[in-house]
Image (cartoon, rainbow over all chains, first blue to last red):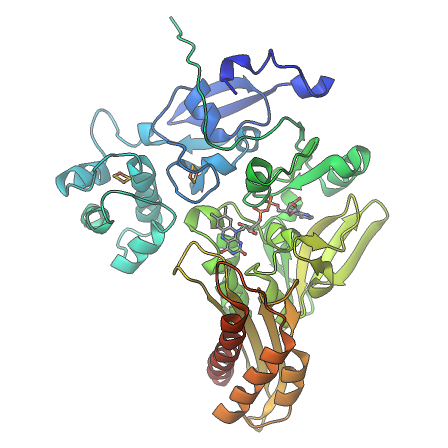
Amino acid sequence: MTTAETTTETPREASALEKVTVRYTINGEQREVEIAPNRTLLEVVRDELRLTGAKEGCGTGDCGACSMIVDGKLITSCLMLAPQADGSEITTIEGVAQDGKLHPLQQQFIDHGAVQCGFCIPGMILAGKALLDSNPAPSELEIREAIAGNLCRCTGYTKIVEAIAAAAD
Amino acid sequence: MRVRIRVRYNAPHMRRFDYFAPTSVEEAVSLLQERGDGARLLAGGTDLLVQMKEAGVHPSAVVSLHAVDELRGISDESDGGLRIGARTLMNDVAAHETVRGAYTALAEGAGVLGSTQTRNMATIGGNIANAAPSADTAPPLAVFDAEAEIAGPGGTRTLPVIELFSGPGSTTLETAEVITAFRLPAVPDHTGSAYQRHTPRKTMDIATVGVSVKLTLADDGSIGDAAICLGAVAPTVIRAGEAERALAGETPSDELFASAGELAQAAASPISDVRGSAEFRRYLIGVMTRRCLGIALERAQA
Ligand SMILES: Cc1cc2nc3c(=O)[nH]c(=O)nc-3n(C[C@H](O)[C@H](O)[C@H](O)COP(=O)(O)OP(=O)(O)OC[C@H]3O[C@@H](n4cnc5c(N)ncnc54)[C@H](O)[C@@H]3O)c2cc1C
Ligand code: FES
Ligand code: FES
C-alpha cells in the first residue's frame, strides 16, 4: 500500500474512509496531522511528519528499531496506533541533539566505534537515553537489560554497552 | 515543494477499521455492544496489533482503552488486599512496592515479560484476556486466587482469574465484556511466592514452562497452605491440585518438594513445539516446581 493512495482505495465500508486528526508535540514542536486510524505511530512519524530516523525492522515489537520515547516511556512505535498517541510528547532520534550539539550518548557511540551500518542506532540511543534518564549510573547488566529489546546485526553489542556506560560517567 | 514518495512496505500491515477512544468503561461496553463480534478492545496493542498484522485478525472496529483513566493504577483495598486496574502497564506492576513485597511472584512475572518497550505498552488486562497458556502474569495471579472484575451490558461480575481461560487464546468473557481490574486477597503473614520461567533465550522469549508457587507457613514452621500454578504445559494455565494437597500440613524438606514436583508433572499435558518437546517440558516442571518451592520457602521464612 502507498501513503498517497490511502484515500483513493475502494473503502470496505463507508465509515472506513474517515480520518482522525492527531496532535503531537514531537521533539518540542507542535504538529497536527490527519490520518487513517489504522496507521501506526511509526508510519505517521516517518511518512507524514518526515522524520525518518526511526526504522521499521520487524513491525512486530521484536527488534526495537522503531523505538521512540512517548510521554517519558520508551516504546516500539510499530505497535502503537497513531491515534493512541494523540496529545503525547514524543522524542525521536532527531530530537536528541540539542542546539546543534550531540547528546553525550551520540558522542560516545561515535568515540567507541559503536556504529556500523547504523540501522539499529536510533533505537539504541533512545533506549540508552530512557535508561540514563531514570538511572544515571547503571551497571553493565542493567545496560544489557535496557537494550534487550533492541537487536543489532553488526556490532555484537559490546561497544554499544561500553558507549552507554561511558555516557553515564 | 513537497515530494510524494511511493513507499512500498514489506513489513506487515493492518486493514482498515473504525476507531473509537471512549473515556469511560460504560461507553466502551456500549460501543462493543453496538458493533458486535467484529469489534475488538485495544489496550497496549502488543498482542492485538501483531495479530492484526500477521495472524489474519481483521476487526471492523477497534475500541481503544487508552483514554479510560479509571482502568489504570494500583490501590490498596480496605480488606488488606490489592486492586490492579486492567489497563495498568507491566512495568508499573513490576515496580510497585506492595506487589514486590507481598505479591512477589506477580512482580516477577510482569518483570520478565518482553523488553522494556514491551512492558511500557503491555497491560495486565491484555495479558490475561489474550489467554496465551504462556502468559507470564497468569500463574502468579492464579496462586494468589486473584479475581477478575468484569463489566458488561448486564452490569458487573467477578470471576476467579483461572476460570477466565477456556483454551489457548480463548476466554469465557462474553461479547462486550471488559475486564476492569484484578482483585488480590490480602496475603497472610509468613507467606512467600515465586515465579520462574524457562526460555531458550534469556530475554525476549515466550515461556517453555512457567511455574508459580505460593507458600504460607503455620506458626510451627509447617506448610499451612500451598498453591502451585503451571504455565505453557496445557491448553490453559493449570493449578497442580494434588501437589498442593500433598504439601499442606507437612514440614518443608527437599524430599517433600521433590515429590511435589513429581505430582505437578502428572498434572500437565504438555505439547512439543519449537521451544521444547513434551518430554523436556515435563522434566522442567519437576525441576522448576522444586526450585520455586525452595525460593518461596526462603521468602516465607524471611
Ligand atoms: C516483543 C514482544 C514480547 C512479548 N513477550 C511476552 C512475554 O515474555 N510474556 C508474555 O506473557 N507475553 C509477551 N508478549 C505478549 C503481550 O505483550 C502480552 O500478552 C501483553 O500483556 C498484552 O497486553 P496488551 O495490553 O498489549 O494487550 P492488547 O494487545 O491490547 O490486547 C490483547 C487482547 O486482550 C483483549 N483485551 C485487552 N484489554 C482487555 C480488557 N481490559 N478486557 C477485555 N479484553 C481485553 C484485546 O481485545 C485483545 O484480544 C510479548 C509481545 C511482544 C510484542
Ligand atoms: S519495527 Fe518496531 S520493534 Fe521492530
Ligand atoms: S549497527 Fe548495524 S544493526 Fe546495529
